[in-house]
Length: 192
Image (cartoon, rainbow, N blue to C red; front, side, top):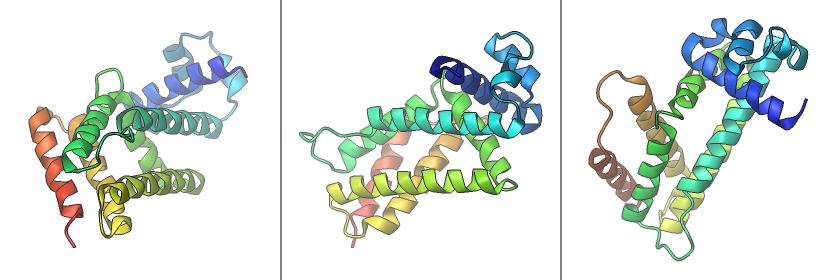
């Protein structure tokens, strides 16, 4: 399977998951979403398990790319609650932008599926551990005296903001509200 065809199928699988959940993730639905001839997805991903694998791999790649472009502070930028909160708000806004929000929704569907699927559970645990490690590096750079436990809480905080912005039907939180919440959370990481 070519890299382009893999991305096409994986992106379509994520969009199907976001709108129809794991039960709606069928080869026919992914064919239609990807604009492929009936049976094309079955040829490249012959099982639902393989479709889930492609979706998870693509989701992780997209999330890593988004984190790298929004959370990575340049070496010349002093890491403090203000600069890091701007980066964090940028990450949340990018992840929940209309063209990307389907990924947050698909992630929730995949996380629910991972409760019943040990292989998916392991993949998510490994990806979360890597994100917690990355958050710990950011907090250490900011001067957090106990970065490890705070990194886990920072990831929980980010997950809750993503959920609030993408899954709750009320109006999304405003940028100033997100910024204030992020600054407060990050300042608490600096307390002994």
